[in-house]
Image 1 (tube, rainbow, N blue to C red):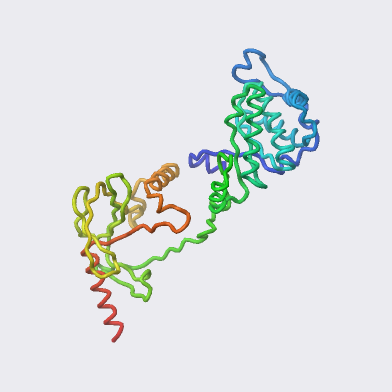
Image 2: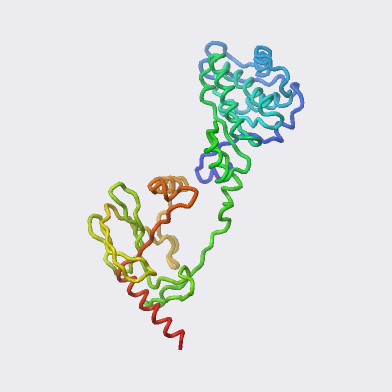
Length: 347
Protein backbone atom coordinates (compact mmCIF):
# COMPACT_ATOMS: atom_id res chain seq x y z
CA UNK A 1 0.00 0.00 0.00
CA UNK A 2 2.78 2.42 0.89
CA UNK A 3 4.59 1.65 -2.36
CA UNK A 4 1.37 2.15 -4.34
CA UNK A 5 0.95 5.53 -2.67
CA UNK A 6 4.47 6.50 -3.65
CA UNK A 7 4.33 5.26 -7.24
CA UNK A 8 0.78 6.31 -8.09
CA UNK A 9 0.41 9.46 -6.01
CA UNK A 10 -2.35 8.02 -3.84
CA UNK A 11 -3.05 9.49 -0.40
CA UNK A 12 -2.36 6.86 2.25
CA UNK A 13 -3.28 6.69 5.89
CA UNK A 14 -3.50 4.04 8.55
CA UNK A 15 -2.72 2.96 12.08
CA UNK A 16 -1.04 0.10 13.92
CA UNK A 17 -2.09 -3.54 14.30
CA UNK A 18 -3.31 -5.51 17.29
CA UNK A 19 0.01 -7.35 17.29
CA UNK A 20 1.79 -4.05 17.89
CA UNK A 21 -0.22 -3.43 21.05
CA UNK A 22 0.20 -7.04 22.18
CA UNK A 23 3.99 -6.78 21.85
CA UNK A 24 4.07 -4.41 24.85
CA UNK A 25 3.59 -5.82 28.34
CA UNK A 26 4.66 -3.09 30.77
CA UNK A 27 5.11 0.65 31.14
CA UNK A 28 8.88 0.16 31.41
CA UNK A 29 9.00 -0.35 27.65
CA UNK A 30 8.00 3.29 27.11
CA UNK A 31 10.15 4.86 29.81
CA UNK A 32 12.86 7.26 28.70
CA UNK A 33 11.36 7.83 25.25
CA UNK A 34 11.57 11.54 24.43
CA UNK A 35 9.22 13.67 22.33
CA UNK A 36 10.11 17.02 20.83
CA UNK A 37 7.47 19.63 21.55
CA UNK A 38 5.77 21.28 18.64
CA UNK A 39 4.17 24.58 17.68
CA UNK A 40 3.26 27.11 20.33
CA UNK A 41 4.35 24.79 23.12
CA UNK A 42 8.00 25.19 22.10
CA UNK A 43 7.93 28.89 22.86
CA UNK A 44 6.69 28.23 26.38
CA UNK A 45 8.61 25.07 27.30
CA UNK A 46 11.42 24.60 24.82
CA UNK A 47 13.07 21.24 24.24
CA UNK A 48 12.01 17.65 24.66
CA UNK A 49 9.91 15.83 27.20
CA UNK A 50 9.59 12.24 28.37
CA UNK A 51 6.09 11.57 27.12
CA UNK A 52 5.28 8.73 29.52
CA UNK A 53 5.70 11.06 32.51
CA UNK A 54 3.06 13.39 31.07
CA UNK A 55 0.80 10.43 30.31
CA UNK A 56 1.05 9.05 33.85
CA UNK A 57 0.37 12.50 35.24
CA UNK A 58 -2.87 12.60 33.23
CA UNK A 59 -3.68 9.10 34.44
CA UNK A 60 -3.26 10.17 38.05
CA UNK A 61 -5.29 13.32 37.50
CA UNK A 62 -8.27 11.53 35.91
CA UNK A 63 -8.04 8.43 38.06
CA UNK A 64 -7.92 5.78 35.33
CA UNK A 65 -5.49 3.49 37.14
CA UNK A 66 -6.89 0.16 35.94
CA UNK A 67 -6.33 0.49 32.19
CA UNK A 68 -3.99 -2.01 30.53
CA UNK A 69 -0.35 -0.98 31.09
CA UNK A 70 0.99 -2.72 28.00
CA UNK A 71 -1.58 -0.97 25.83
CA UNK A 72 -0.74 2.38 27.40
CA UNK A 73 2.96 1.79 26.73
CA UNK A 74 2.17 0.86 23.11
CA UNK A 75 0.12 4.01 22.56
CA UNK A 76 2.83 6.16 24.15
CA UNK A 77 5.52 4.68 21.93
CA UNK A 78 3.30 5.05 18.86
CA UNK A 79 2.66 8.71 19.71
CA UNK A 80 6.39 9.38 19.83
CA UNK A 81 6.80 7.82 16.38
CA UNK A 82 3.72 9.52 14.85
CA UNK A 83 2.79 12.58 16.92
CA UNK A 84 1.22 14.38 13.95
CA UNK A 85 -1.01 11.47 12.92
CA UNK A 86 -1.81 9.79 16.22
CA UNK A 87 -4.76 7.43 15.66
CA UNK A 88 -4.99 4.26 17.77
CA UNK A 89 -6.63 0.87 17.45
CA UNK A 90 -8.42 0.58 20.79
CA UNK A 91 -10.13 -2.84 20.89
CA UNK A 92 -7.17 -5.13 21.64
CA UNK A 93 -8.30 -5.72 25.23
CA UNK A 94 -11.36 -3.71 26.33
CA UNK A 95 -12.56 -0.89 24.10
CA UNK A 96 -14.38 1.28 26.65
CA UNK A 97 -12.67 0.33 29.90
CA UNK A 98 -9.12 0.46 28.59
CA UNK A 99 -8.64 1.30 24.91
CA UNK A 100 -10.39 4.64 24.61
CA UNK A 101 -9.17 5.72 28.05
CA UNK A 102 -5.54 4.95 27.24
CA UNK A 103 -5.92 6.80 23.96
CA UNK A 104 -7.27 9.86 25.77
CA UNK A 105 -4.41 9.83 28.29
CA UNK A 106 -1.78 9.87 25.56
CA UNK A 107 -3.79 12.30 23.41
CA UNK A 108 -4.01 14.80 26.29
CA UNK A 109 -0.25 14.57 26.75
CA UNK A 110 0.22 15.22 23.03
CA UNK A 111 -2.02 18.29 23.23
CA UNK A 112 0.19 19.65 26.02
CA UNK A 113 3.16 19.17 23.68
CA UNK A 114 1.52 21.12 20.86
CA UNK A 115 0.19 18.25 18.75
CA UNK A 116 -3.33 17.41 17.60
CA UNK A 117 -4.40 13.77 18.11
CA UNK A 118 -6.49 12.32 15.29
CA UNK A 119 -8.77 9.67 16.78
CA UNK A 120 -9.39 5.96 17.24
CA UNK A 121 -10.13 2.86 15.21
CA UNK A 122 -12.70 0.19 16.12
CA UNK A 123 -12.25 -3.30 14.70
CA UNK A 124 -14.76 -5.42 16.64
CA UNK A 125 -17.92 -5.35 18.71
CA UNK A 126 -21.04 -3.25 18.27
CA UNK A 127 -19.50 -0.56 16.09
CA UNK A 128 -22.50 1.78 16.31
CA UNK A 129 -22.70 1.68 20.11
CA UNK A 130 -18.95 1.85 20.67
CA UNK A 131 -18.52 4.80 18.29
CA UNK A 132 -21.21 6.80 20.09
CA UNK A 133 -19.68 6.01 23.47
CA UNK A 134 -16.27 7.17 22.25
CA UNK A 135 -17.70 10.48 21.09
CA UNK A 136 -19.49 10.89 24.40
CA UNK A 137 -16.19 10.47 26.25
CA UNK A 138 -14.37 12.79 23.84
CA UNK A 139 -16.92 15.56 24.40
CA UNK A 140 -16.61 15.21 28.16
CA UNK A 141 -12.82 15.45 27.94
CA UNK A 142 -13.01 18.44 25.58
CA UNK A 143 -15.09 20.34 28.12
CA UNK A 144 -13.25 19.22 31.26
CA UNK A 145 -9.75 19.91 29.90
CA UNK A 146 -10.61 22.82 27.59
CA UNK A 147 -9.32 20.81 24.63
CA UNK A 148 -11.45 21.69 21.58
CA UNK A 149 -9.66 19.14 19.38
CA UNK A 150 -11.54 16.37 21.19
CA UNK A 151 -14.75 17.69 19.63
CA UNK A 152 -13.44 16.69 16.19
CA UNK A 153 -11.90 13.28 16.85
CA UNK A 154 -12.15 10.64 14.14
CA UNK A 155 -13.73 7.29 14.85
CA UNK A 156 -12.68 4.87 12.13
CA UNK A 157 -14.42 1.51 11.80
CA UNK A 158 -13.11 -1.64 10.17
CA UNK A 159 -13.90 -5.38 10.61
CA UNK A 160 -15.02 -6.76 7.23
CA UNK A 161 -17.22 -3.78 6.43
CA UNK A 162 -19.52 -4.45 3.48
CA UNK A 163 -22.41 -2.65 1.80
CA UNK A 164 -25.06 -4.43 3.88
CA UNK A 165 -23.31 -3.44 7.11
CA UNK A 166 -23.03 0.19 5.99
CA UNK A 167 -26.78 0.39 5.41
CA UNK A 168 -27.48 -1.27 8.76
CA UNK A 169 -25.20 1.17 10.60
CA UNK A 170 -26.80 4.17 8.89
CA UNK A 171 -30.28 2.93 9.84
CA UNK A 172 -29.19 2.26 13.41
CA UNK A 173 -27.32 5.52 13.95
CA UNK A 174 -23.61 5.75 14.76
CA UNK A 175 -20.68 8.09 15.39
CA UNK A 176 -18.29 6.64 12.82
CA UNK A 177 -16.52 9.30 10.76
CA UNK A 178 -14.83 7.01 8.23
CA UNK A 179 -14.73 3.36 7.26
CA UNK A 180 -11.71 1.21 6.57
CA UNK A 181 -12.87 -1.18 3.87
CA UNK A 182 -10.36 -3.79 2.79
CA UNK A 183 -11.53 -7.27 1.82
CA UNK A 184 -14.85 -6.15 0.37
CA UNK A 185 -13.24 -3.35 -1.59
CA UNK A 186 -10.94 -5.81 -3.33
CA UNK A 187 -13.67 -8.44 -3.84
CA UNK A 188 -17.32 -7.36 -3.89
CA UNK A 189 -19.44 -9.98 -2.10
CA UNK A 190 -22.51 -9.15 -4.17
CA UNK A 191 -20.64 -9.65 -7.45
CA UNK A 192 -17.26 -11.30 -6.84
CA UNK A 193 -16.62 -11.90 -10.55
CA UNK A 194 -17.08 -9.53 -13.48
CA UNK A 195 -18.22 -11.43 -16.52
CA UNK A 196 -16.63 -10.11 -19.71
CA UNK A 197 -16.99 -11.77 -23.11
CA UNK A 198 -15.42 -10.75 -26.40
CA UNK A 199 -17.92 -10.90 -29.27
CA UNK A 200 -17.57 -10.33 -33.01
CA UNK A 201 -19.99 -7.66 -34.32
CA UNK A 202 -18.34 -6.83 -37.66
CA UNK A 203 -15.88 -8.51 -40.03
CA UNK A 204 -14.38 -6.93 -43.14
CA UNK A 205 -16.95 -4.15 -43.00
CA UNK A 206 -19.92 -6.51 -42.75
CA UNK A 207 -22.05 -6.71 -39.58
CA UNK A 208 -22.27 -9.99 -37.69
CA UNK A 209 -24.98 -11.15 -35.29
CA UNK A 210 -25.19 -13.96 -32.73
CA UNK A 211 -28.67 -15.34 -32.08
CA UNK A 212 -29.95 -16.79 -28.81
CA UNK A 213 -33.19 -17.69 -27.06
CA UNK A 214 -32.03 -15.27 -24.36
CA UNK A 215 -32.43 -11.65 -25.41
CA UNK A 216 -29.48 -10.70 -23.25
CA UNK A 217 -27.23 -12.83 -25.45
CA UNK A 218 -28.43 -11.57 -28.83
CA UNK A 219 -25.71 -9.30 -30.22
CA UNK A 220 -26.43 -5.86 -31.61
CA UNK A 221 -24.48 -6.01 -34.88
CA UNK A 222 -22.07 -3.59 -36.52
CA UNK A 223 -19.69 -0.88 -35.37
CA UNK A 224 -21.37 1.57 -33.03
CA UNK A 225 -20.97 4.81 -31.15
CA UNK A 226 -22.46 5.42 -27.72
CA UNK A 227 -23.73 8.68 -26.22
CA UNK A 228 -25.18 9.77 -22.89
CA UNK A 229 -28.08 12.21 -23.00
CA UNK A 230 -28.68 14.63 -20.12
CA UNK A 231 -31.69 16.72 -19.10
CA UNK A 232 -31.70 20.40 -18.12
CA UNK A 233 -30.58 19.52 -14.58
CA UNK A 234 -27.54 17.63 -15.91
CA UNK A 235 -29.07 14.30 -14.88
CA UNK A 236 -28.44 11.44 -17.35
CA UNK A 237 -31.70 10.26 -18.93
CA UNK A 238 -30.45 7.33 -21.01
CA UNK A 239 -27.61 6.10 -23.20
CA UNK A 240 -27.99 5.86 -26.95
CA UNK A 241 -26.18 3.50 -29.31
CA UNK A 242 -26.05 4.51 -32.96
CA UNK A 243 -24.49 3.11 -36.10
CA UNK A 244 -21.07 4.43 -37.01
CA UNK A 245 -22.52 6.51 -39.89
CA UNK A 246 -25.64 7.71 -38.04
CA UNK A 247 -26.27 11.37 -37.36
CA UNK A 248 -24.62 12.31 -34.08
CA UNK A 249 -27.08 13.47 -31.37
CA UNK A 250 -26.61 17.08 -30.31
CA UNK A 251 -27.90 19.24 -27.47
CA UNK A 252 -31.10 21.12 -28.18
CA UNK A 253 -32.06 18.93 -31.13
CA UNK A 254 -34.72 16.20 -31.17
CA UNK A 255 -33.29 12.68 -30.96
CA UNK A 256 -35.32 9.68 -32.11
CA UNK A 257 -34.75 6.32 -30.45
CA UNK A 258 -36.32 2.97 -29.58
CA UNK A 259 -35.76 -0.16 -27.50
CA UNK A 260 -33.36 -2.55 -29.19
CA UNK A 261 -35.38 -5.75 -28.87
CA UNK A 262 -38.97 -4.54 -28.98
CA UNK A 263 -41.07 -3.86 -32.03
CA UNK A 264 -40.28 -0.52 -33.57
CA UNK A 265 -41.95 2.10 -31.41
CA UNK A 266 -40.09 5.31 -32.08
CA UNK A 267 -39.77 7.86 -29.28
CA UNK A 268 -38.17 11.29 -29.21
CA UNK A 269 -36.25 13.38 -26.69
CA UNK A 270 -34.44 16.71 -26.73
CA UNK A 271 -31.29 16.55 -24.61
CA UNK A 272 -29.75 19.55 -22.91
CA UNK A 273 -26.29 17.98 -23.05
CA UNK A 274 -24.74 15.07 -24.94
CA UNK A 275 -21.55 13.22 -24.05
CA UNK A 276 -19.86 10.58 -26.19
CA UNK A 277 -18.90 7.58 -24.09
CA UNK A 278 -16.56 5.49 -26.22
CA UNK A 279 -12.98 6.46 -26.90
CA UNK A 280 -10.24 4.35 -28.41
CA UNK A 281 -7.65 3.81 -25.69
CA UNK A 282 -5.61 1.00 -27.19
CA UNK A 283 -5.14 0.29 -30.88
CA UNK A 284 -3.67 -3.05 -31.85
CA UNK A 285 -1.16 -1.49 -34.21
CA UNK A 286 -0.45 1.83 -32.54
CA UNK A 287 -0.71 0.70 -28.93
CA UNK A 288 -2.02 3.22 -26.39
CA UNK A 289 -3.49 6.17 -28.29
CA UNK A 290 -5.35 8.04 -25.53
CA UNK A 291 -4.13 10.10 -22.60
CA UNK A 292 -4.75 7.95 -19.56
CA UNK A 293 -6.11 9.62 -16.41
CA UNK A 294 -4.44 9.18 -13.06
CA UNK A 295 -6.12 6.96 -10.48
CA UNK A 296 -7.20 10.03 -8.53
CA UNK A 297 -8.74 11.55 -11.67
CA UNK A 298 -10.56 8.28 -12.35
CA UNK A 299 -11.83 8.21 -8.77
CA UNK A 300 -13.05 11.81 -8.95
CA UNK A 301 -14.82 11.14 -12.23
CA UNK A 302 -16.50 8.04 -10.80
CA UNK A 303 -17.72 9.95 -7.74
CA UNK A 304 -19.01 12.89 -9.79
CA UNK A 305 -20.80 10.61 -12.27
CA UNK A 306 -22.55 8.67 -9.50
CA UNK A 307 -23.72 11.94 -7.95
CA UNK A 308 -25.57 12.82 -11.16
CA UNK A 309 -27.74 9.69 -10.97
CA UNK A 310 -31.29 9.95 -9.58
CA UNK A 311 -31.63 8.65 -5.99
CA UNK A 312 -34.03 5.90 -7.12
CA UNK A 313 -31.30 4.52 -9.36
CA UNK A 314 -28.74 4.07 -6.58
CA UNK A 315 -31.01 2.91 -3.75
CA UNK A 316 -29.84 -0.37 -2.21
CA UNK A 317 -33.15 -2.23 -2.63
CA UNK A 318 -34.89 -2.63 -6.00
CA UNK A 319 -33.01 0.17 -7.78
CA UNK A 320 -34.52 1.69 -10.88
CA UNK A 321 -32.79 0.37 -14.03
CA UNK A 322 -30.85 2.66 -16.33
CA UNK A 323 -32.09 2.67 -19.93
CA UNK A 324 -30.00 2.08 -23.04
CA UNK A 325 -31.70 2.65 -26.39
CA UNK A 326 -30.70 2.41 -30.05
CA UNK A 327 -31.16 4.67 -33.03
CA UNK A 328 -33.82 4.04 -35.66
CA UNK A 329 -31.25 2.79 -38.20
CA UNK A 330 -29.55 0.47 -35.73
CA UNK A 331 -32.93 -0.96 -34.69
CA UNK A 332 -33.81 -1.59 -38.34
CA UNK A 333 -30.56 -3.37 -39.18
CA UNK A 334 -30.62 -5.42 -35.98
CA UNK A 335 -34.09 -6.80 -36.67
CA UNK A 336 -33.33 -7.36 -40.33
CA UNK A 337 -30.32 -9.54 -39.51
CA UNK A 338 -32.21 -11.16 -36.65
CA UNK A 339 -35.03 -12.28 -38.93
CA UNK A 340 -32.59 -13.36 -41.64
CA UNK A 341 -30.64 -15.40 -39.14
CA UNK A 342 -33.77 -17.12 -37.91
CA UNK A 343 -34.78 -18.03 -41.47
CA UNK A 344 -31.33 -19.45 -42.26
CA UNK A 345 -31.17 -21.43 -39.04
CA UNK A 346 -34.52 -23.06 -39.74
CA UNK A 347 -33.45 -24.43 -43.15
